[in-house]
Image 1 (cartoon, helix red, strand yellow):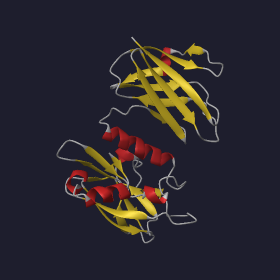
Image 2 (cartoon, one colour):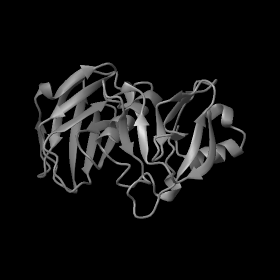
Image 3 (cartoon, one colour):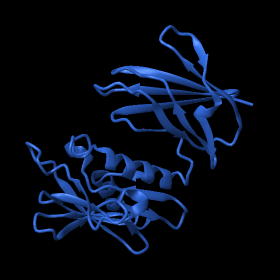
Image 4 (cartoon, one colour):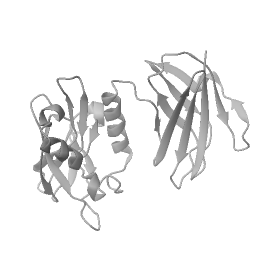
Length: 236
């Protein structure tokens, strides 16, 4: 589960705090920076402070955060700092409970539009969220598209193939598709692209590289702003 504080609070009120590994507190509005603490989740190697703006900094109307704290056994990936550089809350927290379930909790309150704020969305945040989803899925992330902002990935599994849709919701075109398809034990014999004319075109095999239980995709196809690209992976 990937939780924001309002959902976390609801679970804690129902007596499930021990299953989520995180306690939730009051709303706070003095968070200025989020500092990443682990390199596997976006902290730059050799950088003493890798900082992200929080949705309260620079916003016309403050998007409040909720104070969250890890319980025993939970892993703190980041922390929220105030303007005096003192910690006002934990940031991203990961926890694996006694049932084997994995939980990730963000401090940004999705009920208050914090998560869709421009100060939340950036390239480093993409690394953080991709690493978080990869951890939650135990390395079986279904489909991830990197190197582009405001992209919606879609995956449809069929008996003999997998269809991948890439919706480009940004104002900039995508000139090359870079992504990863996980949880894919079968071998792929070919990869194709559906063009704007509806015709299917086979791509070079170099566009695919087997990594772990999935494939890295690097396809030289363009997707215009507010357009959709379609790739098809054919199984052997």
